[in-house]
Length: 195
Image 1 (cartoon, rainbow, N blue to C red):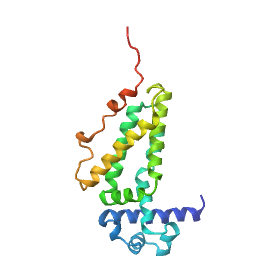
Image 2 (spheres, rainbow, N blue to C red; image 1 turned 120 degrees about the vertical axis):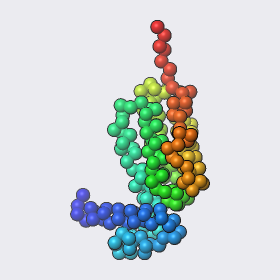
Image 3 (cartoon, one colour; image 1 turned 180 degrees about the vertical axis):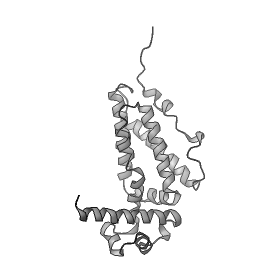
Image 4 (cartoon, one colour; image 1 turned 60 degrees about the vertical axis):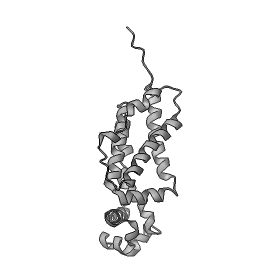
């Protein structure tokens, strides 16, 4: 990467981080492009190099929190599916919590018109499931599509309930933990352990 590209990435990161800070405090509707660029210490025109309108930045704010999950999961290739999905649920909840209610709400509203986040989550989870089938952890006839959407529904449901309660639910509360083992049990390949 050349110096110009590096500087451009640094500028964009400053803009995204400034927007994240402001939107988390005030909500998207109460933040202007001027506010964002002032906090970022960049010219207003720099914002428009990357975004057409302020609402467009929400996806990048959300991506700051979620971009490492796939990389981390790839490093966990030796773990079983239960460990991977436990980790995925934990990191997802942490990501949403660190974004805060106002950003998550704006991010969710923006993603209603764009399937990119759903597709991203679908691909991540279905890859975990397909790997488990290849590793004989799940039955070969497992309906990957159905199981993937079931998991996504749980994740999105947790996020929605958290937003609707204004963030007043402890994401580490055991009552809202996902029992991955019982979720997967009907699909698990049972080994014959008779003596």
